[in-house]
Image (cartoon, rainbow, N blue to C red; front, side, top):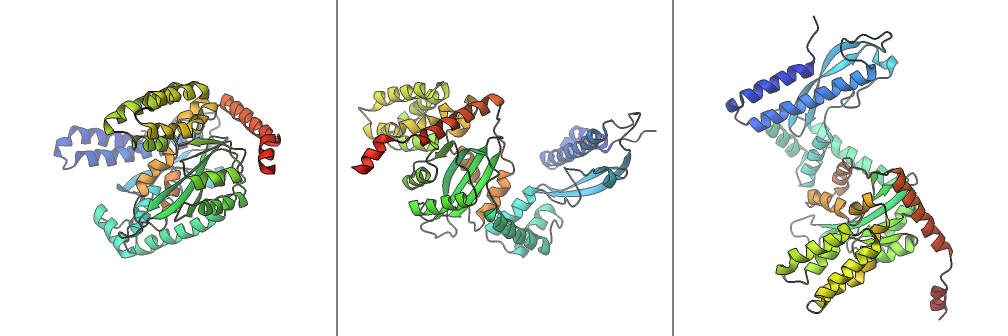
Length: 411
């Protein structure tokens, strides 16, 4: 008689739980935990099915190998330990099979590691972290040595990460931003942290660099940028950042061929600060509508100039912000249409910063963990062709001497 798969048993448990949900003190928690177990268990079984090329009990002429029952495994997560049954295969070492989901040595998720790190960032000691996790999960999740090892490993990984080469990344888009954090409640001014990440021609998002920059000055950004170049960072096609003058001065020196895109969110925020609140909703709608609907940089430029004309007489200082940043606001429209909403702002890191605006000494640990979950950018063949054409154009323009610039220098 065929045995019942572990996933089927969990599926039956889930059905019974839903049917008797009124008897649970916390039905959402119970359903969520069992549902998480079911998803992981099914994924483990599907992984082996794909490797063997056949379903359970399906007969094939020359099978790759045979299933060999299950072995219990516990994965520690921020929702508590999840007990699973990892399917086994006969002679796995000879076949080269190892689960990519819950392989050998996998005992906890990145989320639990992030929880441990964040606990230290908030000032808890090793014993405090251990006790807090034990109290939360009603059992010992990690020991003192494990908590200490997580932090020790974090320091070592950060050291290696700071020294790694960047030549391998064929960079298309480069994002630069800074965050200010209060390391202590009475910190004044807050500590500045410079951050950069990029998107490669393969569509991967990569966290590239991180450095303290207390003033976010020209010197801070220059030191940061030179370190990136020393480790082999290639020139991007487009740089996206807010309007910090020191940042852009450095960008033009280090990556003179790159096009410039001002963060549309930052520019809009600067405009709204100069307008009465009753106009905020109206102007935001028009502003984003122009950028969303424009098919080219020229269309967006015309639309923004029309918006400026409507408000300039009453609010000249607000409209001067848009006029000053006009060309850099529409530059993203020169790139593939499917990338435009992703490259017109530094929104990716702004969302990440929401998670790390807290007391911290190793902000890299949280950003690095968060970056593992960043979704890439789709690079279709058409998009790659467009980007390469833009790159060639930028290289060609850089190779042609600017006679006007030479006259200004001579003068």
